[in-house]
Image 1 (cartoon, rainbow, N blue to C red):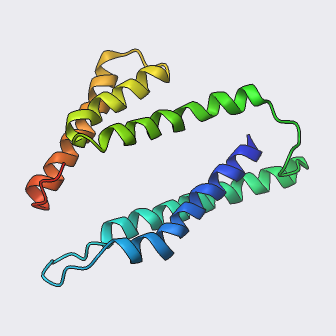
Image 2 (tube, rainbow, N blue to C red):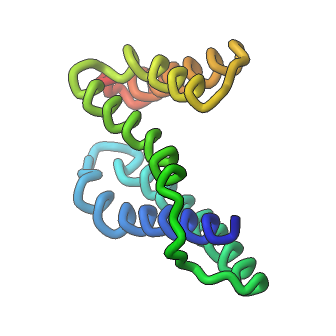
Length: 150
């Protein structure tokens, strides 16, 4: 697992850095009348991604150095790569589908479907992990931020 820890941590840290340096400055916008700048919460999330990804990447690198494992390997198991790619396809199709309807109408089904596909069978876990985040997003956007777009 050190190789996968290293690469996944590196990718998460790179995405956090990309968000900090390009996405948030260019797309967060500005609101001089807001008490909280629009880029604050995304910046906190991006910093958390950068720090956590960096910690995981360094941990994986240290484990690889101790075990004398090379970071890259030409021995790829394409079945495993294909199996690891299906969640990305699932999310891509869901994003396309959500471009036609609001996330609060589809978000719980998206999360519940992913949990079921990943092997979760306890109904209270599926219900709680799929409904609670969507409900919190709704409360945050409609009542706390007064956006009402979800």
